[in-house]
Image 1: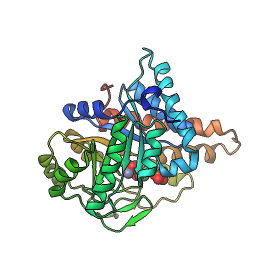
Image 2: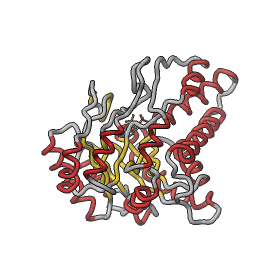
Image 3: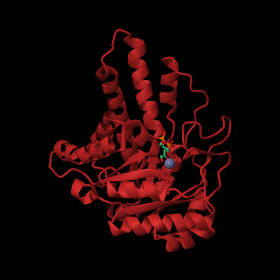
Image 4: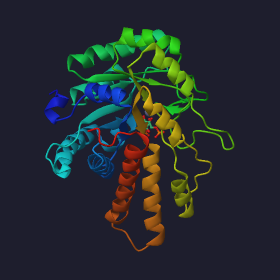
Length: 324
Ligand code: G3H
Ligand code: 13P
Ligand code: ZN
């Protein structure tokens, strides 16, 4: 039986994005696969009074089971109310990250997601339009908002490896958004997924000039930036200190994310930084307290580290603190 996101207390992204575009901030979109990640995201966003998008990838669905994740998100709404102190909580959207087929997006709409991403960016332009439009037509019937994508991020996206970025062409964005009816658009301007975004010794810069061009063509439209982890070097160093082997992990400078957020970027996807924060904390506990074997003794500190990371993002990078 289909369930509406509204019955679960979730919201779609329409209002949060309208506020973000006007207010010069971005709504954080954080991925989760388990209880501790969900708790950390909610604690950070409630404490900083930030709206939030909880994201579930296909990989997360396989790892944790789609039904359990959906119930965790439903639980998140009640959890936020409980810990917020005022009983109201914060606006929470539940997004399918990198949906690749109509059927998967439909499934998620039917099971209570409030936003779905259809990533047709690997298809030829007209096929991308056709697929995205089909998802929009279905999702909008249930007031579920939709994110599309134009341009391809280098690295691994939906299990497809792209050696080079295919930057979004500003000339296409107006036609694409009009013909598909999407509510937000993910673009490729030099970010990529994972912890190894740039070669060492280069001067990592994203193409804010392309972002500006895109904004001129579709003023006020919500732009989404994937692959926006900054790969904090203190976390990489901590992982390596306690037995890890991450060589040349490099991310996007926070100053560049801050710049992007001031303009049309109103959703920023961050996953890898959270993985680094959790891994560093777990490694530290296991290396310094080898007698511990209670998972709460390492997952607890990992959750705390994740929460601090996300608070920092909301307050100092995305400017979303206080916007709930
Ligand atoms: O876009 C990628 C996200 O970081 C999710 O990663 O597919 O390994 O869950 P995943
Ligand atoms: P990062 O790998 O940079 O955290 O990007 C995550 C992402 O884009 C999820 O869709
Ligand atoms: Zn992504």
